[in-house]
Length: 266
Image 1 (cartoon, rainbow, N blue to C red):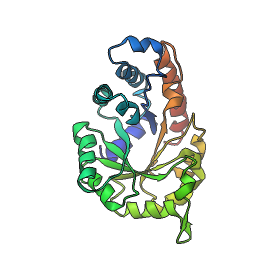
Image 2 (cartoon, rainbow, N blue to C red):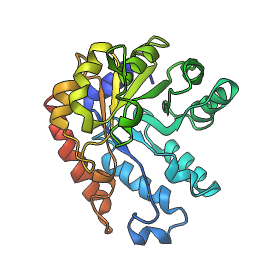
Image 3 (cartoon, helix red, strand yellow):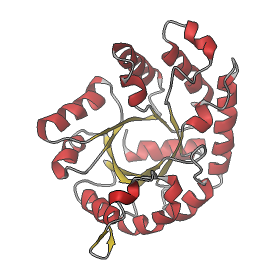
């Protein structure tokens, strides 16, 4: 999916909502465990209930990989079920070099046909560049995360500015705003202003709104650009809004509430 197609979806739906499909067998409604593929059945119902309200879905690969072969089957079925006009993100956080990075890119862009994949930049350009060689595909690079461990490295001062700004600026030089996005945690919303000075045109994937305490208003105040430039992710706050047989309707209600808040900015 190219940038124009993504922007068209945002304008059409009045939304820049990304829903994280972090399906967990220990958290999904118990009645789903009677299905042949509980994970896919859960995802399918979430997608059916929310596909008109969001512009992206983001399966977190850890929730599928831990299930072995069955998890990969559920993942493939889920990706194939997502409507083609909706942006798909493989939240895999891969970060390796050379042929290994190339094979990771082939895995998620060709074998599973995702539009994008999250990538860790710690090993440098040769860990990111292979993901930029696929037309219409995106690398979403970790920029500034919201976990406590972010202070171990990301805020270290380099050249009189924090390391994460140096990393974001350097990574941006390897591609364009048409094949690179950056992850910036919503709980660091005030940091978005400084990040926008470095990458004014790039899309930002912003997790942490909702269950993790991030504020959509703060994210928009600091992070919006002329083309919206945001994909705001909510996972637990939407997909686990209910735990009974009407869980999909509860998820829709939670997604609709967020979409209505977003609509005023589009």
